[in-house]
Length: 444
Ligand code: SF4
Image (cartoon, rainbow, N blue to C red; front, side, top):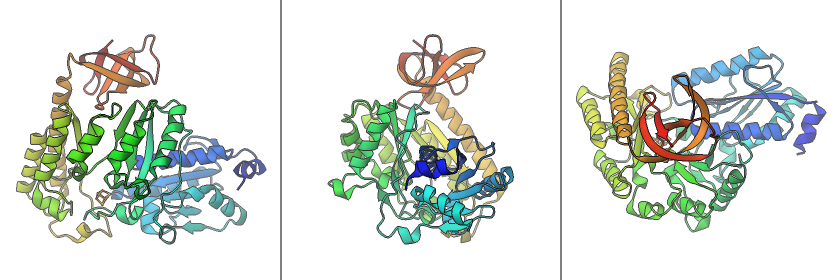
């Protein structure tokens, strides 16, 4: 299809996009924004009047469902004549076109966005396309992002789908089975991203640990990292969320010599109690999780290990929660993301007995958030006086002074004086003090 021609015919149109949810969604929203701007649309803010609105929805919690509906109806209110497109996990898992949306696009059909808008605008007949019938061959959806140059860190989606079926999670239903992007294709996009000035690449996926390119000698995630490391323009390679099972000696041996590899491991824990993990259908024990952390620290003694934890999972007794609390302290995470369990229809845990009272969930959540803050501070304190390097992202005024902030390889946020400095540049220096609770001063 000649996309330029499509918009020229309609005179310069305006499109607005809104993203909800995870890094993978954010990547896809950017990719759809790029498709629209390549087709000649002006991309405007979601609060402005536009001809086309695209809402990339999320369904990870009830609140995410609600927000997805709200944003769709907000778009409709903003311009009753606009073409409103709803896509993403909320749409895919409900297999229904949400109220106020003209077009519903399933998760593996987003690449068809322009074609579907054109179809709709010709007929004004509502359109619904979902994933199932299109996913038989389990191919990776060809959405690409290479030309987006607004950030210093590029998220590169290399994997989609999940086969794990954790008992609380709707994602395998919304995203479908595991599929991976070919190594050569990832290298290609990474090259295009570095040409645009990106120095840091974050490999993302719904279940990144499942990455496998059978057509490239069964390349797994560590092989992909090695393959990317041959490009000297990629200065940092970061990974998004991982499962502890991926941390093997073989994996660590492969990445240890990759200079660009960031020793920041987000290892999803969810619970520090074996009985709870079993009910969650997580396929590891706390002993295995601990062994993974020990192995990471054998290779990178100061590795930043971060995690997600769910509190108030059905049947979580005070004693079980206590085990989680103790385990978190034992591991000594750098950052802890705490989620309160929320029921998702269509999952196993929805019907589990002994659902935990909301007050109890709040109490447990507060307790873990506070432990998380302490652990994070401890981790940062240890950096005092050491030499660190950040890649500058945004200018920020902190306590009346202008700084550039950025993160270290370990994902610790630091700031350098803005004087004579620029965005997207590496600066090193000595860690001096806490500027705020979350930002350290780097004296260059
Ligand atoms: S691993 Fe579990 S929590 Fe993660 S996406 Fe798959 S089913 Fe959901």
